[in-house]
Image 1 (cartoon, rainbow, N blue to C red):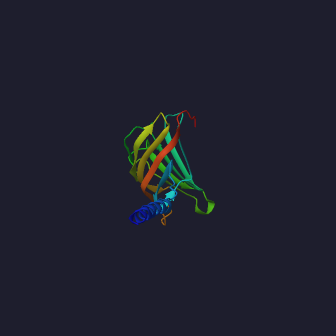
Image 2: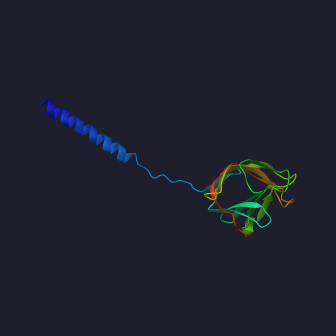
Image 3: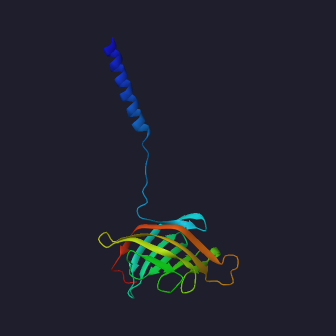
Amino acid sequence: MPQIHDFMKKYFYLLMTVILFISCTEDVKFNNPAFQGLKDNSFWRAQSYNAYTTTNGDFIIESALGFEKVTFKMPYPTQKTYILGIDNTTTVMYSNSLPAQSEQFTTGENRGSGHIIVTEFNTETKTISGTFKFKAINEDKGNLEKPEINFTEGVFYKIPVNITANY
């Protein structure tokens, strides 16, 4: 009799283990690549993104969500921190081209603040990753309702780079 009891006990434990594994599965979605952050404390994730070099040597990272667009301009990237608001070499532009909400915000020399940190620029896989945070100033100085826009906790991850683009 003890043998049947031990067999049933093992069968029960096996059945519970199988049920446990089946019930613990879930679909995991990876954001690879991604461009996202908090825009004025609201989550913002780009639907499209790309990076390329221009004929004059600028490196551009563009991301878009509908009518909204964020553009980074910097020298050819290396793993380092690029400070915003001190020159026109490294800048950020946010624009909304929806006619009812048309606006543009920029950083530049003595304009705005923040940083772009390139954590990886992989020329083999042709991707770029990093973090960002910025405050950009409204191009419309008369817009007292919205004089600036803030992005915090920004991340760009494995954005595809077209190294030979001629834009």
